[in-house]
Image 1 (tube, rainbow, N blue to C red):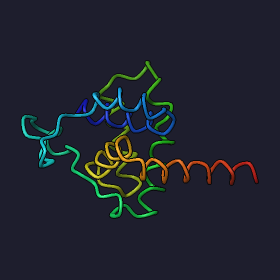
Image 2 (image 1 turned 60 degrees about the horizontal axis):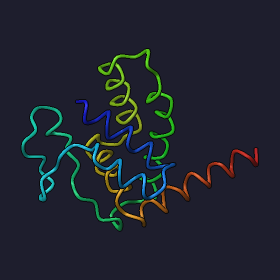
Image 3 (image 1 turned 30 degrees about the vertical axis):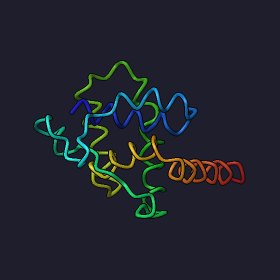
Image 4 (image 1 turned 60 degrees about the vertical axis):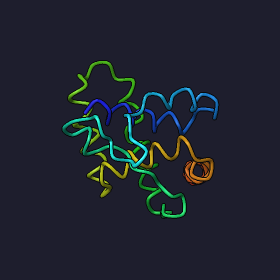
Length: 136
């Protein structure tokens, strides 16, 4: 379950970090076999192991949902007053509450950290929201 929190926090980091920093942080994701199976893990971590993502298969709606979840969880990463188990529950509720499967969220987080095309789409979504907020 800690892999979910680590990947979620990594996802937040991918929204702001440089490509070089993202490459260093990619080591914090859960181990996944080449087939995307997460072999070697047990329990919930294995069920939530990220699977490979084709950027063309990611809809604009998924990008928007991913960004919403990541933005909702932004302060969670730095809140030291919450134990990890509580943070994990909050992350799971945030993901499920937005209608996204936790495994898909983790797969997207990993893909965004590795695929420039997805990074650009996420950054464009964030910029669009920032522009909409400034216009209000």
